[in-house]
Length: 95
Length: 484
Image (cartoon, rainbow over all chains, first blue to last red; front, side, top):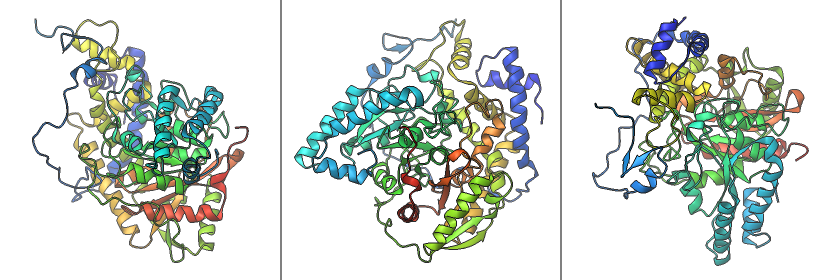
């Protein structure tokens, strides 16, 4: 299987990865090789087989809805790229 | 002291023949000498390690010491350790000081072990050679031109070079077993759900599992005793009674049925590795085991299935690295989307980006059924093959890796060739079974060869016994690289 340049640009956009034309071209060649490997799966008849999502098929455990963690806002914000007044700063989103 | 088992080191500490501070200094000095070449450690903080060693000496003095109290353990840099830089081999987390301990780290802390430092690894555990690390490749102590394997390459190199008493690793598709094989050490990936993933930076959550890497099966058993146990903070951590993984070490092998999967000895396996594995199986027969021919007909599909499922899970897990709450943020950007895209483009390396893109694609609209769902269905077929196989045998054996350690740069430009390094290990993760690698000889260029042992679910104690009996009869595991 071969991906088009547009396919790779779309994947990069969905994955939030800035890529220039050279990187897109390189990714296209390598991803196409990987999808050739993956294509071996397509020949297998899997009708009637239940998908396996997990090695231990247990139902999700529930816990009491109570607070278990202490507030560590300062410790967590100390390692953030940009904070002010206890808030995480990002570029303006709403005009 | 460097070649003593963990139990013997513990005995020496408890008998006051050496203090934990002295033992820790011994390893720190060796790291200072050899790490500039091997690059096995990303972060060493002597003051932190020595403070833990002093606390361990106090426990040893007041009689509250446990099996691993005072023993210096290298921690893979995928485990968050409070106050320690935790990078996961990535520029994205170059500046990340973990604000809490992973469950594995708190287990070692509670046992009084010393954190000797954080070991180098492939970026976000994605790689089979340790060449994808932002902090440069690790070198194999048996031949510094060769790779140590990956992703736990720093751990394997450090154990082989005696730069720690033992180490932790993680294994998503072979990342404990393949580097263990390439560096001539012993490593075990336990049954999925046995060791808590809390605080272990996620790659592919349905496959990731931590385990020990050490110089022998006996050492691995002692480490596993500390690492395992239920943790409510990991929703997939299993609720099971605490086990003693040492309990079957001395069990004789008479009557053991070893399954040899035809598919593991077919095309693609190098001659030198095949010869060592066959010699190991012959040794097992001498020790009383019998051999059964088995088949894992879908095992050949493990690599393609893995390269759908693992990237799919990774693309979701790694979406958290957005430059907002922690880690790297690009210095210049125009708006929020631009900040995300530049942060991730600059913070992630080529292999990580490649896998995020594979995952993004297979989960995207219109392709989900053809890729993701089909891979999950074949995952079940692969797991069922093992269920059938274990009706005929107690353990499965084969090669861990198709070749001995390859040279740095040898597979650099071809991701598919690199992915095939894990052809024998990946199926085990897909099924969630325990798997281990033990040294069983040397191949081309006198580089180590690993024997893979796969057990049924929760049979780690049996596997460790099977490995230990071999290690009593042979000395491959106690050989060390020259010049160190």
